[in-house]
Image (cartoon, helix red, strand yellow):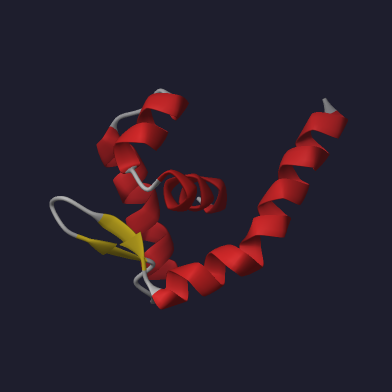
Length: 79
């Protein structure tokens, strides 16, 4: 979920991330909704034409960014 959140935040689109990951956009949306529910925070402001991080989303992304990158590096190293 964290990687999906970071990807959506950086690309600004559920559809772009779904194409990259080869999954339905609804799957990406459900992952983000589950994360928001677990955190009890709204991470994105959604409209029909725009997706933007909330202030809480920006703070969260800033804090988890290095963690997500570290996990990716650990996975690459382990492989």
